Length: 591
Image (cartoon, rainbow, N blue to C red; front, side, top):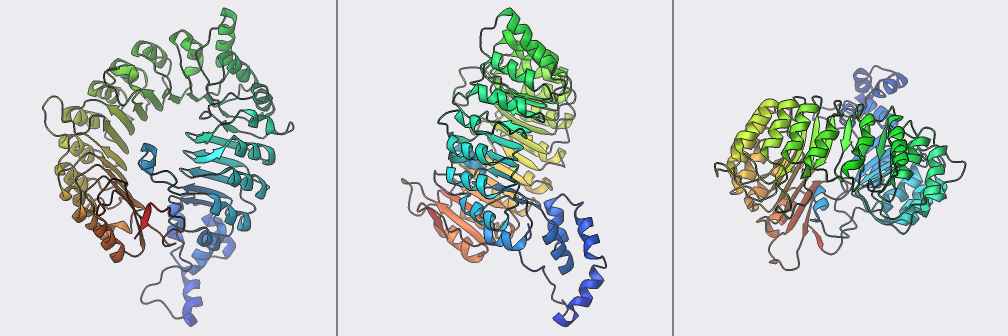
């Protein structure tokens, strides 16, 4: 996002007296024509590039932009945004670093949306959409949102915290034009499910309703009435308090659904109820996405079979299915493009995927229990190889396993050379190739050499600096790199920072990289969105040097209570046009 109030000028820029002539020659289009042309640009990156052409294009882009994406809420201030873009109707805003998902960012770190909403209420009373990720959202903030924007239509809260169902009551009561309420993976104080009854009885505009991450029982009668009124509802994801017979009643009232998240799948059904539920699923002719299935038992899986043929996304990350029952289900899903499963399906289950899902593009395999290998065997390299043989279109993978080999990874990327996202997580830190006892360097060397379109990479296992030499040399399109428990010396991180011309995010934890590694990226960091380092060998002195030499970067250090005073336990570095943030808590030292 370009936030400078004036486009950049070269050393030979014309004087003010010549600026009009220069602008006219650079942009011969009338304003309305230029505005129409810019309306066809949907990419934020493209629009930002256009704004640098000349002053006319800058102003045209400024006045025609209606959607805004901010990947770090501290990279710019609400005041700068309000000055730069006067007609914003849709905002996507991200807050905490991604490693907060792994409890590595302390509580009360920041990323509160309240100050943003206060500013938006002043300058964007016509705001229609707000999508937040890893932000802190209070009930007071939700009340402002619900009352300050008369035409507000869409709210998405993903991995957010700080609010309760009381805040949802405000949204339900006041947002009369709401089409989307999407609450995903959110830490919410769930007092009760009464908030659903706060939607007015004449309200019927919802197209997306997702409250799967809430825990308490909801007012089912209110939910059923709401679903009945919302004739355009295409996405419905309920929480696990919804029973199978309640689900069947909802499906009867919304057969037009395209995405469904079910409730609990563990309930004793009478023979007639089983048939009614099966019929309800078969009548959902437009269903493309299926998730939920909490506590699913194999006896009820057949009710899904009729609806599976048209599915393109199946999310079983809450369903601990075994290989046989999973294999029976997946045989009915020939059109899947995306699949999320638990490792309880084991290699046999993944072999079934390779046989049944030739169009698969994305696979995510999560651990049912990441801390206890003895509970079940999980998946190995054999399952991964089997998928790659049968799913040549695969380009996104997140794969948690207990063991892997260099040869298997080389085979996988030969079978699927178009990976853009390759995230391999071997859950035993520092584990080598279990057959040869060699480091896993050649595995990731094969990935970056073969997959020339690679944009995101997560590495794991026993890795030396050679892995990072491969990455720096070959990963020309890499944008995000995540590293844990890997590397031999500072050289590894230096290789990445000296190579990887498109790198935007670098996330490192529990690695031997120290001060020399940190300071080797001085010329790189301003072109990146952020750097995260935790439990590495970095000192506060080095962080201070980085802050002095790169004043346009925000360098933040978080200290652990028991650590040496000289150590920088957690370091977060990011570019910002707003300067140091004003809401840093006492445990965050801004250098």
